[in-house]
Length: 475
Image 1: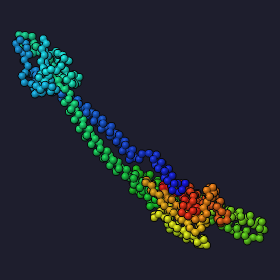
Image 2: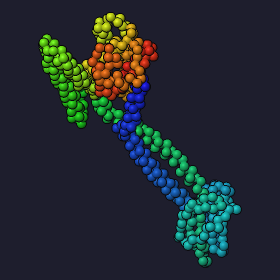
Image 3: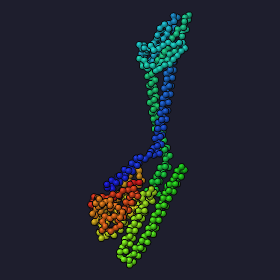
Image 4: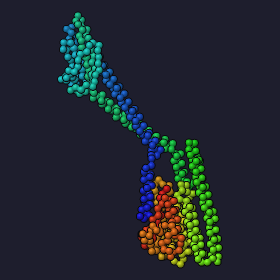
């Protein structure tokens, strides 16, 4: 697996973690508001629709009642008790066959009268009512369609005869009622939908304005993480002042603790290096027999190597949440190569750079120098004449600090695949004839691991030698 694949693997892990991230506050509020608003507007729409339907039904009953009263007022009885119906109907629709508005009168002795609109229609479902009795019924399924009808019973007084009992009925199909209701419902849905969209947009605007302080905190945190600011701003609402104050305190505490830690390690390095140097010089100047002096010097050398390795490992800071600043790579790479060219001047090594503009390391400068210095030194050791340093940034949306891809290639003999794991072990050198402590690559591994990255070793596609690649993920 090369460094590019390793970087993609790290990015995939980061994306998986982001995919499992819970909804943001804005998304939660918008979703909740949308559901509540939909339920609220739905309830309002249902209530208004039912109310309008009831109003239309009452209106229809009133119209049918008025028609019945008009027919009753225009009806008279002959001396023989035969009802005399009015010549002019209260509405022209009563004269148009199949108009949907019908009038029927039932009376004693099988009397039956129908308006012109009802001729040929079956109204057998009607029945007489007692005088003064009324009823409004519907909708009723008939061969004429679904009908609403209003009936009213009366008794017409006839001189010197028994009153004539009549039942006046006016019926109307539900088509007009349903048509009016459907138009109202469509209009209601349109207005409620428009109102809902307007309310959602207004809510989102208010929500965006309300969450502005939180976005400012997130933006300021990103600036601190990128090293563009030392602390969070102090201008926040009262509800966030306590939180931001504690975050600022944590940032200062982390930096102070890291500084004390590194100073302590530096003091420890000086404390250990000096006694070891004194012991070495005294043993070398002593007249001890070679059989005694050689093992002592060997143990002193091993102690010196162990101290150097453990101090370098302990001083590795690792990935920091609040980096002091981004460390540019190009300048430090040039300084390291100039130093190595002097050390390995006899080999006449040419080191080429392929460094992306603006590539930076987000961490401690000492970690970068240890990481890049050990890889470059390893390349100079094994190279025939060429070394290539490649540095590229890996940016990922939603991550304030880009990842880093750093590789060092040489035209040396390369490393056998079965030797790679052994070479990466502390204190092991690829060739015992090459000088060194064998701890450089182990230190590189510790630094890479501290920054949650990956170190891979394979063959250089350009030079044929070894390629050491480091992939650090975006943070």
